[in-house]
Image 1: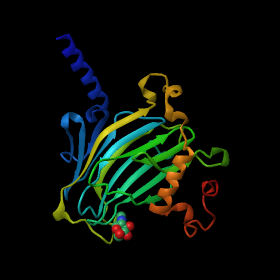
Image 2 (image 1 turned 120 degrees about the horizontal axis):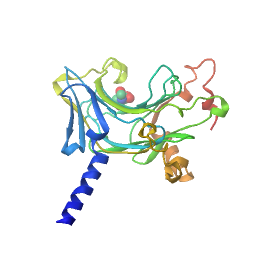
Image 3 (image 1 turned 90 degrees about the vertical axis):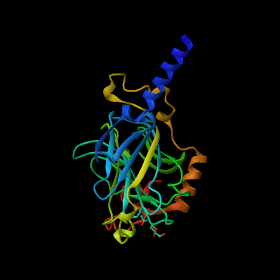
Image 4 (image 1 turned 135 degrees about the vertical axis):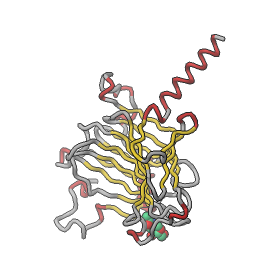
Length: 275
Ligand SMILES: *[C@@H]1O[C@H](CO)[C@@H](O)[C@H](O)[C@H]1NC(C)=O
């Protein structure tokens, strides 16, 4: 009896720490966002009436944040699934993953960006080396005082370094919430807006599970976070991870603002010339 009670208590604690209802609020799209499987699964759906979105209850200042996402399958052209961190206010910081849908069989575009003190314009876009609609895959943001590393299934795809010493702003003072939403963006998303959303295929559904934030929560009243014990606090890419990131960037990157000289006639942003 006592053992059963203990098991029950410990499993409830585990669920509370990982469940979506405990960690997130649905912010828009009444009826289009659902907590399922005892809060272990969250789905967003998009139809002609509405998309939907959610946001984290907590604000984070640095951390390693993982989410497993299964994107809208089939003909997802025109749809955008955004998953990002953002602070508030005019000089906000933001770390973005955005998934632009496509016709059946054509590849999604994974769009990334980093805003620091209100300034973005740092887009890098990728194709993926797998079909992101067949299974869940893990999209991670590792954010510490020296790096913002974007990862897909543990493979780094982008490393935005802290180059404040060279005059480039870096997000490090403003806590951010996690946001995600699924909406219709067929005026620009797929082939620049040429391919429209096919509403006969609605509802379009994206699914989320296994959220994990090993992160500092300034408002929790705890000491800022136990950074000394957190591997991610000092983490940077070792040479093997660097090689994997180079492999992704060589084979799967389809846009890099640092190569877009036409867009920056006054010269590329400073971080582009610092390896
Ligand atoms: C969709 O597929 C086409 C054809 O492969 C590709 O050019 C395009 O970049 C893909 N992604 C988007 C979001 O349009």
